Amino acid sequence: MYYISTRGQAERLGFADVLLEGLAPDGGLYVPESWPSFTAAEIAGFAGMSYAEVATEVISRFTGDDIPRDVFAGMCEDAYASFSHRVVVPLSQTTGEDWILELFHGPTLAFKDVAMQLLGRLFDHVLAERGERLTIVGATSGDTGGAAIEALKGSANVDVFILHPHGRISEVQRRLMTCVEEENIHNIAIEGSFDDCQAMVKEMFADKPFREEMRLGAINSINWARIVAQSVYYFTSAVALGGPGRALSYCVPTGNFGDIFAAYVARQMGLPIETLCIATNENDILARTLAEGAYEPRGVAQTISPSMDIQVSSNFERLLFEASGRDAEAVRAMMANLKQAGRFDVAGGILETIRALFIAERSTETETAAMIREVFETTGAVIDPHTAVGLVATGKARHGGRLSGPVVTLATAHAAKFPDAVKQACGIYPDLPKQLSDLYQRTEKLTVLPLDQQQVQRFVASFVRKD
Ligand SMILES: *Cc1c(COP(=O)(O)O)cnc(C)c1O
Image (tube, rainbow, N blue to C red):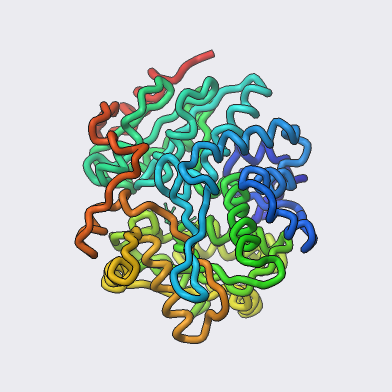
């Protein structure tokens, strides 16, 4: 199995290289050269398997010969044993044909754990095999940093430096990153904004001598391995609800378009999916793109669903590549326009192809809060704001006749991760699950640094373990 770049100007690579590279050198994103597929009978056969077993089946179609199958099966077992729910990602029914897929039972209470728990193990395996080490540097506005730290703490081959904006993330989000004792984990609180943190990380990657000496690596959401790990729960949920015999629709709270693209991957592999609904908050670039055929980022608005406060939805490039019939030249032209003019038009044919499978719905702040309250009042369940955005979108699409039949809405985070917004919406302050009940008593480890590139790079250099 080989991977090619959406911009068509990078060498094709195998799975392990793509895992370590992240972004292709031509600026594009890696996609498989061709789609592996399952027959309906093979998918039906997933019904009797554990989550880890289905993960092994699905993901090993993408790993090629890079990782021996029994080793990989062991990694999946370990990764999903870290989840607090017996079935890893349980479904719950809300009304007649509406279901919620709970993706927040991992160690840091958001769906990012599903991919990251496996990625940590994949990194360790590949690096040990090659006798290499890596320094992960990343900026986080919330969930990715915690999931990465949890997955990589104690790794022999990886040092992790996560930058977050000092004083600008929730206490639960911060403590899920900083209450970690392992010596390979370093939290840096930057006296600046999330954008400042991200700019600093970009600078480090652009500093070639520094990048090479530190052997910098990234784990951001364009990493192919993260996408493919997320495609697994579309299979398990569909099979639990009668698939592949009946086609379902999914509604996915969307930011960087990674999670919903994972649904597309499952569909390419043979899973019958009727419609994919992109749920956005007030940062509605994707809803506008589908409606108007123009991709046009605007300023980011701060919302109570901060993990979706994104204006450039990176993984959308993968869908553009697919919908254009894998026309790398067309993708290059669109991305060049984005860089030069800050926008691009999506050609008619591409737009029609996208619209044949995808719809998009937007939730305002008021609607999101009202949904948290409504769910609490009608069912007693306390949901998080990202999940609420999804439920608003599902409701609007059903009402408008754009969704029908069984619909699964993804619950991407646990309410306790966003307690203030939830309390404000429904009056209940959600408790942390019992395995984290002492989080507020744990000792934090973090370093506050000023907005000074050289000082941050010196800090990284002084703590990286040299071999
Ligand atoms: C990351 C995240 C999202 C958005 O997922 P994408 O893959 O970026 O579209 C939604 N909800 C939560 C809680 C997240 O952490």
